[in-house]
Amino acid sequence: AQSVTQLDSQVPVFEEAPVELRCNYSSSVSVYLFWYVQYPNQGLQLLLKYLSGSTLVKGINGFEAEFNKSQTSFHLRKPSVHISDTAEYFCAVSDLGGGGYNKLIFGAGTRLAVHP
Amino acid sequence: DAGVIQSPRHEVTEMGQEVTLRCKPISGHDYLFWYRQTMMRGLELLIYFNNNVPIDDSGMPEDRFSAKMPNASFSTLKIQPSEPRDSAVYFCASGEMSSYNSPLHFGNGTRLTVT
Image (cartoon, rainbow over all chains, first blue to last red; front, side, top):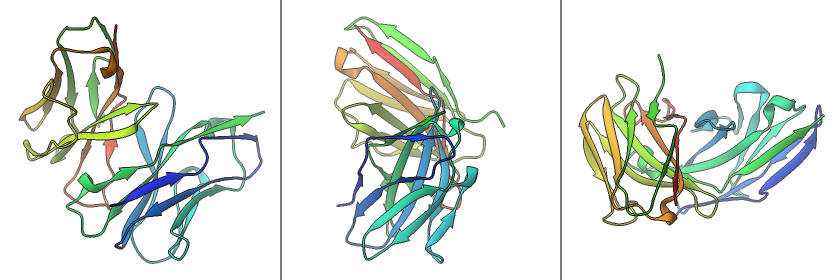
């Protein structure tokens, strides 16, 4: 069975500092990987996804993530954060053989708090 | 495109009452999902539909929960009778075909409080 572990429940950081949100997954098959962001009182929005190809994936709002198959990780990074990046971030995984979105498994989320 | 629309945004009800949550997916999307979000359990998939047909309801917690999709533009999630442990944020999401090149679109959720 697949699972997703987000290693930090909360990450406080100062504005303009770099940030890394960690995600590890467990799966016996090849996977697709996603990061979603949830702003207060809103639904989730897709930040970026890894389906195949280059292991470095760039998303919206200056975020990027690197797929590391040997370490089964998909960490999210941003070189310089803004106050507006304060939100909850979810890592998600789905196996390639799955029947579509029904196989999307979410991590518990990491709350990013950007301070001035 | 107005996105996925959920109503109501907030619902407060007493234990034992029936609760109905509503969702209008994005036009043209043929997949619709109901998720529940709690602090303890995170995001859980309750049920999903493809072309208005329920495909997998294994995530529905118990018989008190039911979901319908009478047409391509409307779905409901009903809890009867409601219990305090049902308090959570319920999200509806829709997707276009079974393709990861098309992201899931989430509504803003319904925050349910059962007292």
